[in-house]
Image (cartoon, rainbow over all chains, first blue to last red):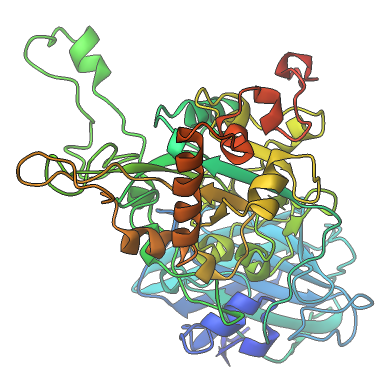
Length: 190
Length: 346
């Protein structure tokens, strides 16, 4: 599948669930990544997402008490059109694969509204990443047979997907990120 | 919109009498050995006693902002590991086991440090014989309106309803450190091994068994009082609510701390002939006002007048309470022997 370039935007300041963040970060830039190149393929057994984005600084560890690691996430609604900017709702959970270069394996995250996200035990999501030419190149994959805590990915399935990127050097963490502000269509070929 | 403080049924109050502190750091070590002796916690001093005027811990924390201004969060930043003070790795192998004991001296492996924990300890301000310093005892202030709590996007920080102790839920914490950024007292530390924020827990497992927190119970100077602020029998109630002789540190930060301080009295100044200047004070009031606000003047006058009364042979219940002839009077009922504690065995 050809790479698709998606525009990223800073998540809205008013959707940040913290008085401190809303007040202090309203005049401070965040969401530095402007676009993300995405490819998705499957081989009948597993699905692979290849994400590439420009990031001049490689923050692959938490090198100081005030330092943050780079990160990226792929987000899926459990079904249908879960609200995206609020990270799902009590009735409409969303699931994310959260990759960070300082972690041994990606987190599997479930959220049912802003500030509600829970890190679940690893669910067979694997990652491989490389930082070269001032960019991150990341492949996230999961076997179709893997049970993803309410998330079903299988050949022939149609669904939605969204993406987010954090730049550690800009102190981006939590809700301070660059994201696709709308769901993208994900059609998995049969 | 101004931040609304969380509601509690009761609130514990703490009083530190700065005039009795010896600067021995027994409190600091009591805390360190009990709570922060694991990997990732090397730079953590949930309790620390800083020499003032000085940079404090972490370095320069008073200039970093945080807290609230007219109810709105005030910007700040997270201190760096160096500002907290690193636990240096020493060249023990070379000196003690490498046969170089006469040619190499013991020193940190990463070269000559220019800052560390308590780097400016006992360093006085002013010129001899009019130099001065005093000790500032710091723990989490267990604020009524905690800036850390308002800053956390995950509601991982909460105030216990029954005693007002502020805790970070280690299961919910994702290590974003907005709390460490927002705390105006800079009492929150980041554990880089667990990737979570951690801080003073007021020894709540001890409190739940009627035992005073370790830094209170271990203090040889009887500096530290604890009790419920609505318990009229407690020393804390009398000192804070009745006599109002203990006041908040940096009240302008707007978080309404529940640690209260009896501010430091001064020795007098000497003139050029070495004679005492009657009525003079070595610690400038302007400096104490910077720490405690203008109300510090009222408290100091009150203490001076009570001392004057006792010198005339009168009794002062206030000074007797501060002296704490009976240690149990300091702990608002939290007087059980630590030896009675149920301790987890693992």
